Amino acid sequence: MGIEVLIVDDHGLIRQGLRTLIDEEDGFHVGGEARTAAEALALAGKLRPAVVVLDNRLPDRDGLDIVGEIRDASPSSRILLCSGLSEGSLLVEAAAAGVDGFVAKESLNAEILDAIRKVADGAAVLGADSAQALFRGLRDRRAALARSRRSPPASVRCSDSWWKG
Image 1 (cartoon, rainbow, N blue to C red):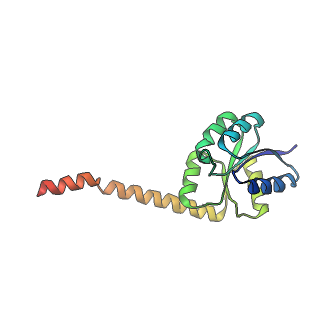
Image 2: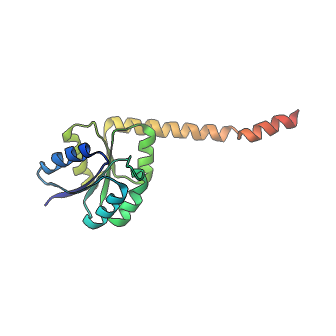
Image 3: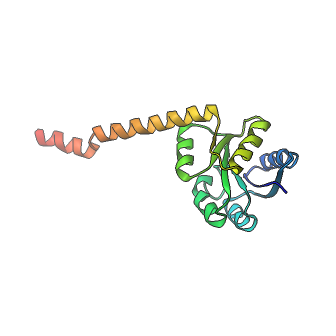
Protein backbone atom coordinates (compact mmCIF):
# COMPACT_ATOMS: atom_id res chain seq x y z
CA MET A 1 0.00 0.00 0.00
CA GLY A 2 2.84 2.43 0.70
CA ILE A 3 2.68 5.93 2.12
CA GLU A 4 -0.94 6.99 2.53
CA VAL A 5 -1.54 10.70 2.02
CA LEU A 6 -4.47 12.95 2.88
CA ILE A 7 -4.62 16.05 0.67
CA VAL A 8 -6.19 19.15 2.25
CA ASP A 9 -6.68 22.11 -0.10
CA ASP A 10 -9.67 24.22 -1.01
CA HIS A 11 -8.79 24.34 -4.72
CA GLY A 12 -9.98 21.36 -6.73
CA LEU A 13 -7.30 21.82 -9.36
CA ILE A 14 -4.54 21.63 -6.72
CA ARG A 15 -6.11 18.54 -5.13
CA GLN A 16 -6.46 16.86 -8.53
CA GLY A 17 -2.88 17.68 -9.50
CA LEU A 18 -1.48 16.41 -6.20
CA ARG A 19 -3.62 13.26 -6.39
CA THR A 20 -2.37 12.49 -9.90
CA LEU A 21 1.25 13.17 -8.92
CA ILE A 22 1.07 11.06 -5.75
CA ASP A 23 -0.98 8.15 -7.08
CA GLU A 24 1.30 7.72 -10.11
CA GLU A 25 4.38 7.37 -7.87
CA ASP A 26 5.30 3.88 -6.65
CA GLY A 27 4.99 3.55 -2.90
CA PHE A 28 2.42 6.35 -2.52
CA HIS A 29 -1.36 6.31 -2.21
CA VAL A 30 -3.89 9.11 -1.74
CA GLY A 31 -6.34 7.91 0.89
CA GLY A 32 -8.56 10.95 0.73
CA GLU A 33 -9.06 14.59 -0.11
CA ALA A 34 -10.56 17.40 1.95
CA ARG A 35 -11.64 20.89 0.89
CA THR A 36 -12.28 22.28 4.37
CA ALA A 37 -10.80 22.04 7.84
CA ALA A 38 -13.90 20.19 9.06
CA GLU A 39 -13.53 17.58 6.30
CA ALA A 40 -9.80 17.31 7.03
CA LEU A 41 -10.33 16.61 10.72
CA ALA A 42 -12.98 13.97 10.01
CA LEU A 43 -10.84 12.23 7.39
CA ALA A 44 -7.64 12.41 9.47
CA GLY A 45 -9.39 10.57 12.30
CA LYS A 46 -10.92 8.01 9.95
CA LEU A 47 -7.92 7.34 7.69
CA ARG A 48 -5.00 8.00 10.02
CA PRO A 49 -2.74 8.71 7.02
CA ALA A 50 1.04 8.69 7.19
CA VAL A 51 1.16 12.24 5.81
CA VAL A 52 -1.32 15.11 5.67
CA VAL A 53 -0.47 17.58 2.90
CA LEU A 54 -2.09 20.74 4.27
CA ASP A 55 -2.80 24.12 2.69
CA ASN A 56 -2.66 27.05 5.09
CA ARG A 57 -5.74 28.80 3.67
CA LEU A 58 -9.01 26.91 3.93
CA PRO A 59 -12.52 28.34 3.59
CA ASP A 60 -13.66 27.58 7.13
CA ARG A 61 -10.42 27.90 9.16
CA ASP A 62 -6.74 28.62 8.83
CA GLY A 63 -4.84 25.42 8.12
CA LEU A 64 -2.25 26.15 10.80
CA ASP A 65 -5.02 26.45 13.39
CA ILE A 66 -5.98 22.79 12.93
CA VAL A 67 -2.51 21.22 13.18
CA GLY A 68 -3.02 20.31 16.84
CA GLU A 69 -6.47 18.90 16.14
CA ILE A 70 -5.10 16.78 13.29
CA ARG A 71 -2.49 15.43 15.71
CA ASP A 72 -5.23 14.66 18.25
CA ALA A 73 -7.31 12.85 15.60
CA SER A 74 -4.34 10.99 14.12
CA PRO A 75 -1.28 11.11 16.40
CA SER A 76 1.03 9.22 14.04
CA SER A 77 0.31 11.43 11.02
CA ARG A 78 3.03 13.77 9.88
CA ILE A 79 2.00 17.17 8.53
CA LEU A 80 3.51 18.80 5.45
CA LEU A 81 2.41 22.37 4.82
CA CYS A 82 2.02 22.98 1.09
CA SER A 83 1.42 26.63 0.32
CA GLY A 84 1.66 29.17 -2.43
CA LEU A 85 3.04 31.58 0.16
CA SER A 86 6.51 31.19 1.58
CA GLU A 87 7.26 34.39 3.46
CA GLY A 88 9.22 34.13 6.67
CA SER A 89 6.36 35.01 9.00
CA LEU A 90 4.24 32.11 7.66
CA LEU A 91 7.12 29.68 8.11
CA VAL A 92 7.71 30.86 11.67
CA GLU A 93 4.00 30.37 12.42
CA ALA A 94 4.07 26.95 10.74
CA ALA A 95 7.03 25.83 12.84
CA ALA A 96 5.35 27.13 15.99
CA ALA A 97 2.13 25.29 15.06
CA GLY A 98 4.09 22.04 14.82
CA VAL A 99 4.14 21.12 11.14
CA ASP A 100 6.78 18.62 10.13
CA GLY A 101 7.79 20.31 6.92
CA PHE A 102 7.05 22.88 4.26
CA VAL A 103 6.96 22.66 0.49
CA ALA A 104 5.97 25.45 -1.87
CA LYS A 105 3.21 24.75 -4.37
CA GLU A 106 5.57 26.02 -7.06
CA SER A 107 8.06 23.23 -6.29
CA LEU A 108 8.97 20.68 -8.90
CA ASN A 109 7.03 17.41 -8.78
CA ALA A 110 10.11 15.51 -7.63
CA GLU A 111 10.62 17.97 -4.75
CA ILE A 112 7.02 17.56 -3.58
CA LEU A 113 7.29 13.75 -3.66
CA ASP A 114 10.66 13.89 -1.91
CA ALA A 115 9.21 16.13 0.81
CA ILE A 116 6.30 13.73 1.38
CA ARG A 117 8.68 10.77 1.54
CA LYS A 118 11.06 12.49 3.97
CA VAL A 119 8.28 13.73 6.24
CA ALA A 120 6.78 10.22 6.29
CA ASP A 121 10.21 8.91 7.32
CA GLY A 122 10.30 11.34 10.25
CA ALA A 123 12.51 14.07 8.84
CA ALA A 124 11.83 17.77 9.08
CA VAL A 125 11.66 19.21 5.56
CA LEU A 126 12.36 22.74 4.44
CA GLY A 127 13.71 23.71 1.03
CA ALA A 128 16.70 26.03 0.68
CA ASP A 129 14.60 29.06 -0.33
CA SER A 130 12.17 28.35 2.48
CA ALA A 131 15.00 28.01 4.98
CA GLN A 132 16.24 31.47 4.04
CA ALA A 133 12.70 32.87 4.39
CA LEU A 134 12.34 31.18 7.79
CA PHE A 135 15.56 32.71 9.06
CA ARG A 136 14.49 36.14 7.77
CA GLY A 137 11.16 35.70 9.55
CA LEU A 138 12.88 34.73 12.81
CA ARG A 139 15.29 37.65 12.48
CA ASP A 140 12.42 40.07 11.82
CA ARG A 141 10.44 38.72 14.76
CA ARG A 142 13.49 39.02 17.02
CA ALA A 143 14.12 42.60 15.87
CA ALA A 144 10.49 43.55 16.50
CA LEU A 145 10.67 42.02 19.97
CA ALA A 146 13.88 43.91 20.74
CA ARG A 147 12.30 47.19 19.57
CA SER A 148 9.24 46.60 21.73
CA ARG A 149 11.43 46.02 24.79
CA ARG A 150 13.39 49.25 24.22
CA SER A 151 10.41 51.48 23.64
CA PRO A 152 7.75 52.01 26.32
CA PRO A 153 4.13 51.92 25.17
CA ALA A 154 2.77 55.11 23.58
CA SER A 155 0.52 55.75 26.58
CA VAL A 156 3.53 55.79 28.88
CA ARG A 157 5.47 58.10 26.56
CA CYS A 158 2.56 60.52 26.34
CA SER A 159 1.91 60.65 30.05
CA ASP A 160 5.64 60.91 30.75
CA SER A 161 6.04 63.92 28.47
CA TRP A 162 2.94 65.53 29.98
CA TRP A 163 4.32 65.00 33.47
CA LYS A 164 7.65 66.64 32.66
CA GLY A 165 5.72 69.57 31.33
